[in-house]
Image (cartoon, rainbow, N blue to C red; front, top):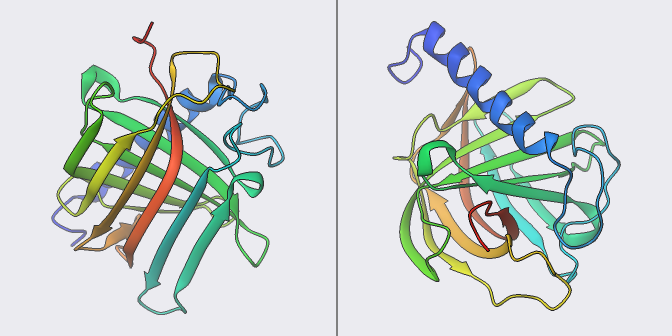
Length: 202
């Protein structure tokens, strides 16, 4: 029993997630550093022009050693945009694992992009081991929370006002599960500085 979801719903979830990530990737990355091609096809080119982007996470596997993710700006890619229907924001990070594989992490936050500080933000997280074609998802906003999601002051290097930098920290109380077998992955904690492209900003 996959957290109460049928296998059909799980498959639908993955399709929607991948389409959402591809939708972000279809737009050139313009985080302020330089325009590059999609993170799905490009070599690592860095995250923020300010040089201070990062992602830190602790991933606890049920039957494998814990993984501590500590990506710094130059060794990762980041992108982000608004969730469909005005349901918040989506932030995407991609980078290397010590074994040479690629990891992509998608945070879906139910917070408005024009709020300076949002607290206790329900968050959906999808973790994609790209080379191994493994996808873990919390499948909803009720398992993880951002303690704080903070809009950062505009960096002088970013000329496009639609590019917004966000600082976040949070945790999960329940595990993400792998499709289709339900294997558990607990995202113990996370914090990051990333970017959101707010198409409605002027």
